[in-house]
Image (cartoon, rainbow, N blue to C red):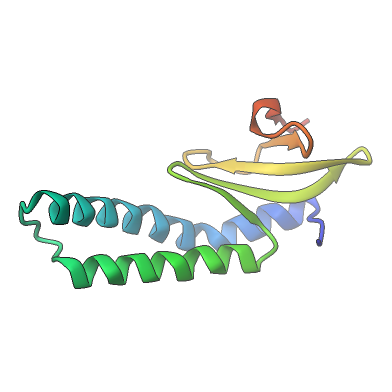
Length: 119
């Protein structure tokens, strides 16, 4: 597993922003389509073919995130971790949907509950 420096992770996050934005939009569409299919209430987004297409595109986008070496840890909300080291300690540089930038980390052994602001 490759480790990211903080500048590399920030650059990769910037590069991934359009992908992450598309995931958020498609996630909402897929949720609406799924609810519509379950209730029988029509939606302007379409039906089963559009739902299947949204699911397939989401799979592609999530694979694209993982292919960078980043770890997609959450879907709703999106949570992306970048493996790194801080003072010789294995950490995950942590971006949560809604964060302006990559300003958080947590030790690899603590998980999200140990999330702290980067020094």
